[in-house]
Image (cartoon, rainbow, N blue to C red):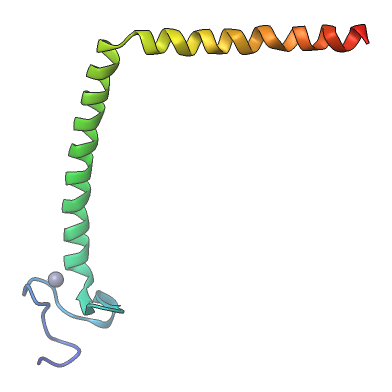
Length: 92
Ligand SMILES: [Zn+2]
């Protein structure tokens, strides 16, 4: 194996310096440069998946406008309950 300093990472693109090396508890020595690249790729994938999910949710919401109406009704019911409780207390 190459010495601690001066060597390159397993992908051969980053120099393995002390500040560029990450000691993983299970995987051993990892290259921070490769981790960064991996994370960037992962985030791009994650963002694309999020976009897809949002588009799917928007499609679903457009298909079912009834659910929104029901939620509004529930809020109205809650608001109507509040003053009724107050008057019941005042009567006592
Ligand atoms: Zn690397």
